[in-house]
Every structure is written in structure tokens, then in C-alpha cells.
Image (cartoon, rainbow, N blue to C red; front, side, top):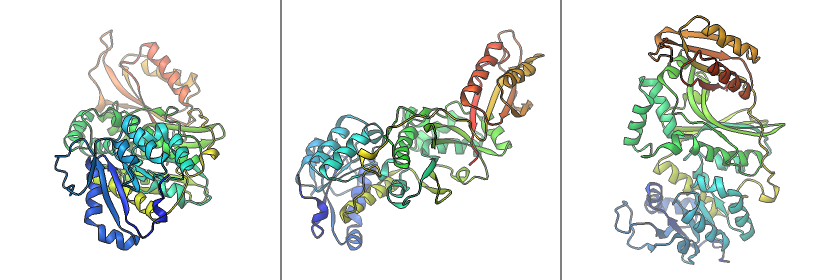
Length: 446
């Protein structure tokens, strides 16, 4: 096992960076540019001595002539020429996993921004780190430049967290914000997001809610002291959100946000990702554009909201650097907040009744008896309706198989169970009075 960097407080901390994309190149640039200031604050020099990247000839705007280049990230992770390994490759398996494991196994501290890797292998990697005495930092893996991991691992003392929720994907927040502000379609917003670099060519991971789910799984483990459970999350993206939903929600005093929510109950832990109607007066409703926000509800501090840039080179590199500084100072904390031996098995709670109820948009056939039948099905299921709204301004041109015109009907329910609503909607669809799929969005009172 190599001698730990924190025992060499006067020697430079030699850093190896695997992955020189936007975040990796920005990190190297910051360390090279701000080296004197970092040394003054730390009392120790930080120096990037080695890197691993696909292309050696690409211009990244950083000085590379004196850097040792590796073609294999695992070889870099094991090299005695570095004291700390930074993984910015990405991906939940393959080279990223192999390199992180290799570094931890020889006792070398690791900093990563890889939420997919941690969601899938975080417990196993934390266990390896504990066994070898290495530190594992991952502040940049959740919410970019927002220090939510440090807050959860070190800043809340004995506070017991009841719920964590937030906006954790800048792509989705950008799209929903523009849809609300400019009245344009999801498809048009997505194209603009891709042009601006906010969305990938294949945006499924973001707009499908999966990126948020990975981040939520990590936060749930830190909040509730449980094992990471990325496969136990209800996930629904924003691709079905229309201008009709945005407009009606706005008229009713709500904004639509893609939220990740995890909460503790007597039955276990509930994790869900989905579009949500939030009151315009709530703090999280004001988090727009590519910003992220994470809210923590605790017994000591009723609600703590952390907000800021959730992605991009400088914010993410800043979070990576904060982990590097902690390691250089010798700060030690269990990767998942508590030793892995004390993590409780994840126990999934059912989707609970939601205090704010549900928003349901239907394209109902404009024929006698349609509305009465819909209301009757809801009543038979024990669902109390707060309001039934017919929107002539949102009349659509779809027709039923019998040639009937349709009209847009919006139902707002009182608190009820997820399964109950879905069962009632299935019965309504089987009655033949609606055209197309019903739109169901949860309402949260935050």
C-alpha cells in the first residue's frame, strides 16, 4: 500500500486525471492557473502530474507538455507517480469501474464525478475504500457545483432527515422553464438544448428521468443510512408534458418541475422521479433554467434548500476540486456517511398518498354521458375530486373511432393512492369515453 498523501503534508499532492473532456480539462486548467492561491490556502502544492485521455493531439486549452500520458486509466490509477486519482471518464462499468477499483485497492484516494458508477457500485467501492484506508470523494456526482454531499456527510450533525427532494437535471429544468416562459413545444426546446450543449444527441438519459434517478439513489443512501438502490425507483420523464399541461398548471398557480423525491416512512423508503406540479410560491418553483436545487427536510432544520449550477465544466470541476482539497487536508469521513457495515438494507415503501393529490388531463369525447361516466368512475374508486375543469381554449382536433369530437377536461383530486388513481383511469379508458392516453401529474405541497 502506498504512503497516504495526508502523511506528507509538506510534499506536493500529485494528481492523476483520467478523462480530459469539459470537466477534466477545466479542472486541470484551474489547478494550473490558480496554483499559487491554492497553495496559499492549503499550505501544500497541488500539481497535476499525469493524465489519461483518448487523444494526445487535441487542443484542450491546457499545458500538457510536462504531463505524463497514460493510454490505460487502470495503469494511471495504479501508478506510483500519483498520490490521488481523479476519474472523469464516465459510465457505470468498463474502464471507469476498473480504474477506480484499482486505485482504491492500493490505498490511493479517489475523486469521481460519476453518478452512474456510484449508483450501481457505490456500496462495493465504499467498502473497498474502508478496507484499504483510502478516501472516496464524489461531491460532483450530484447537483454539479452544489455542496450537497458535503452537507449530508458532515454538515447536519445528528439531524434526522425525513425527506429529500429536488431538481437534479439541468436539461429537463431548462426545457420546462422555456416551455413555461415562451409557450413553445417540448420538441423545440429540446432541439435548442442540444444546440446549446445542454442535451446530448440522444437525450433519453436526461429527459427520461434516469440521470435524476441515479443522483436520487445516492442521496437516499446518504440521507437514510441505507444501501444504494437504483433499481427501486419509480421513474417517469418529461417527454409527455405538453403546452396544455404547462398552461393549465400556470393558470392554477403551479409550475411543472421534474423532481426526484425520497422520503422515509414506517413502511420503508420511497424513491420516485417524475414531473410534479409545485406551487409558484414555493422556493423550488423559482429555480429555473439549467440550475439545480436540493431540499432537505430534517428534525433540527425544518427545510434546507441548496441551489446553484448543476452541470457544466466550471461548477463540476469546482466540486471535484473541493474533494481534492479535503483529501489534501487529511479530512476523513466514511464515503456514504456511515461505515458500510452499518448501512441498513434498502426496504422499498409503496407509492404513498400524496398530500397535494393529482392533476389529470383527459381528451374526452364530446358526447352525452362522457363527463358523468368519468366522474362516476372516480367516485366509485373513492377518489374525491377537488375540481373538474373544462377548457374550451384547449379543445383538440382528435376524434374518436366513431367520429366524435373531443374536449379537454382537467381533474384535480384530493389526496389518494397512486394505485387507486391508475386503476380508475384504466377503467375510464375501457369505457370508451376518452381518446388517447390520460395525462397524470402528481401535485406536491412543498
